[in-house]
Length: 345
Ligand SMILES: NC(=O)c1ccc[n+]([C@@H]2O[C@H](COP(=O)([O-])OP(=O)(O)OC[C@H]3O[C@@H](n4cnc5c(N)ncnc54)[C@H](OP(=O)(O)O)[C@@H]3O)[C@@H](O)[C@H]2O)c1
Image (tube, rainbow, N blue to C red; front, side, top):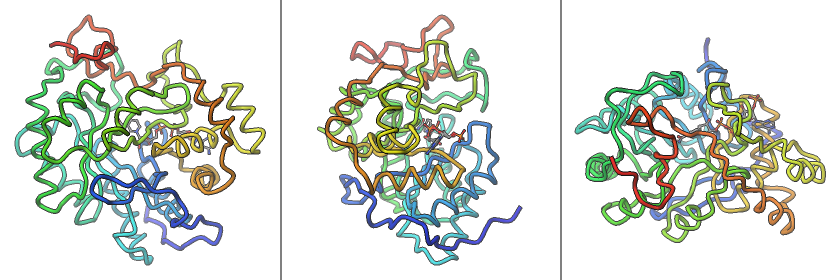
């Protein structure tokens, strides 16, 4: 299937109006990005098509990753967008190194592959996808464990981080960051990094606000990027547990959505942008991705609505990361350093 031709839409949003986060490098990160993980439900072609469509209506920030298995297709989308008239520097492109590529020399290899696939000669942001160097097969069951799984070992992580720093020095990457870390891990990374993380990508939605971590990051000039900002309502069943709550069915979210005459998903995005994180909602449907961007520039939530939403936290983590556990009998909370200390090996 050939990629669609990029044509700026007449019903789009002016990207200059979308709020920006200032990173420690001085670079400006658009405060809403398009997620590109299809969770087995959408093909790489569908997602690449949405990337072109989203750029047509004003998106400039795209959250990619090698493990999503669609960077080649998204590269075709970026080619179409740039052939259609947008300059490379108008786009914000993030990618991530996957867990089986943390070893010496592997980070550069992985980054170069992403650059090639995405058809660009630098990335705006490159993240360590998870702080665990564990491989598991894409789509595997949450109960599956890798025999090679390792806990977080700070000195090993810093060896990976040094390779990330080199990418900046080589000019292949403008900013580097972490993902799926904790306060305990972040304290050590901030202490030992030569180039400190510009962002931490993490789960954030009204039912999972991570207030202490959010405040810690802001105080340390690390911008939080929020994944699953709508609570990933249509994620695969294997990633759901019976105690998971549904943000877009919360009566408070429903009531506020009614007041603003929008889908409850849009309220989650508004809340995220106004709170100060950078949500990266996924959708391949134009009406959805358009409203997710538009809501950052019109009809803000009132202070009372922001307070009501701030009170909704249920500490409901959806992406628990079970497959990264390194012992058979462990509970998933071991990955998240709940008592403020890194869980010992
Ligand atoms: N760093 C990490 O480890 C990590 C982990 C997870 C995710 N991510 C990133 O975060 C992105 C977003 O996460 P996600 O896709 O799991 O969850 P999400 O953005 O919370 O939810 C996406 C789903 O919400 C629905 N939706 C989106 N906009 C809507 C709207 N305006 N109205 C109604 N429904 C709407 C869509 O459902 P339908 O498709 O049914 O319309 C869509 O599939 C991913 O694509 C990925 O880029 C990163």
